[in-house]
Image (cartoon, rainbow, N blue to C red; front, side, top):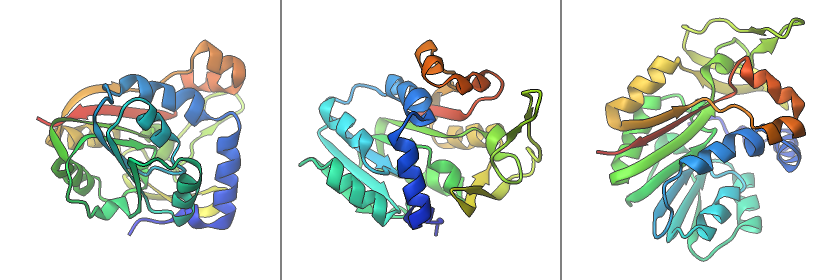
Length: 238
């Protein structure tokens, strides 16, 4: 079972406060993810790790016929139901490392979740079984240059150089983010790409860089030209 850190009250409070202000998700990751999505009109969508349901509103407003939104966190599902309830959105509390779904979807979407999953190959196999032919998988995760370090965060030194290590040593990392012992799983870029391509045809790989507007709002994002924060992969089922 995956770690359910989001139901930790301290973590949950810190995360929700982070997402309420200017943040990397809204300024860097989500704009690129939205650009890579295919037409949503009439599509059945599975959102793995839906969090507080922000994207569910986007899916519905852009014509999705049905959305199944899954998250391990009871607190996140509660927030999603409270803030983003729609007649064609179904929220399910479930560990995505053990998906128990028997439907097929046109799109499987996941934002910044897969680095929490231990068995990446199993996850890709499960997603493949849930996607229709020609269906699209679109996911983002923390970039492997970030997850590589022992505490999985990575560091900038006094000269604005990014310092990381243990890149080729894959596996579990534990670090502090709002609370101690937050678990992530580091995989090399080649491992991620090769595993995805074993089950899907890769359409695009993106390491997003901040726009001029994003830099104006959050100048420290200039560091993303030194090292990328996120890795985004779009693939399709053949």
